[in-house]
Length: 213
Image (cartoon, rainbow, N blue to C red; front, side, top):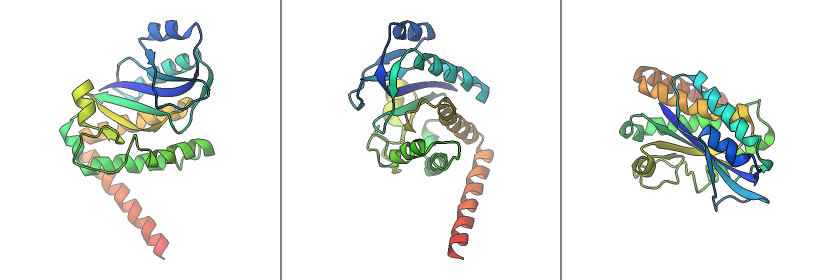
């Protein structure tokens, strides 16, 4: 599996920024959708080969290094993190249960006790964001969905996960990466994925029964 990330931020670059990004194989660009008191910045990583969850550490460390070159960094609801993944079964990802399972796991992030109240608000705000709509559809030509299928594949040969809010919290950033990698690895193992979906469905049924009682 190969992964690349795009991270939207507000802030100021320094004389070190471009040099450090270049040394890591990263780059930066401008994104007009970013609202900020400073300068809109979109960081673009190189492509990483990920064979295990341990490989995500390098992506996190490189993001930390990139952040260290910026000043007055801020994040808000206009900024997101997009995770591009290649070497995945493109057409099979159309399946509704893949979409629903991603949505369920993403919602669970907003209940993580390790997150601040502000971080939880930013995660919840993504459900009403027109740039990453969570509505499932077999029509896949709209790139502004939580999972961008055909447009991203035609342009980059990747699947793009657009749901995540921007963050400077490295632990949360790693959780975003881990969510995507674990979902796709389980999905490739159909038996494991089916078991996970069944378990989550059963847990939801128990919650509903408890509420009724």
